[in-house]
Length: 217
Picture (cartoon, one colour):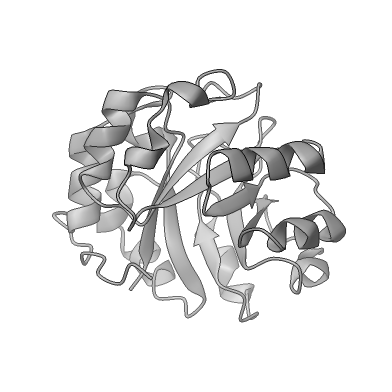
């Protein structure tokens, strides 16, 4: 069953409302150029109050390895998502602590460097290429994914919105054998970092045609 990740959480009340819906993953962005940056507010978010079934993901963009390790340990993150130009060795180092999601920006084809990262991360994430490392609100051409033949499971991000659940072409993409999770962010917001809980609820519970997620492993 395809899992769901809600990324760009910034506020306590909003976080707890979303947590009540039990998404599989919740992402917290540590990137100063993002309007969803939590670097200066993470201490005020009660992460330890989240249900154990929800995996907490720290999202980094080209920060020093030691800083990544310290944040992961201090806040007990379950996963790390690397959204910059982090090297395979950087990924391998973090794999010693938590599973690694390595993000790649997509334009009109799959990145050439995927093979170099196959053995140093646990998941790929495919997002629309943008100047601020994600959060563009724009989808790339998902038909590109038919060319993805690796067994490495991937998260699909990049402008996914409520309307995609009724789109036949998108629903076809969700049957890709290596698709692991859908990563939703800016298209489910009332303002940057503030999620529309009603829209997310419909997405998770399948009210617009998507099956409910069941396996939380």
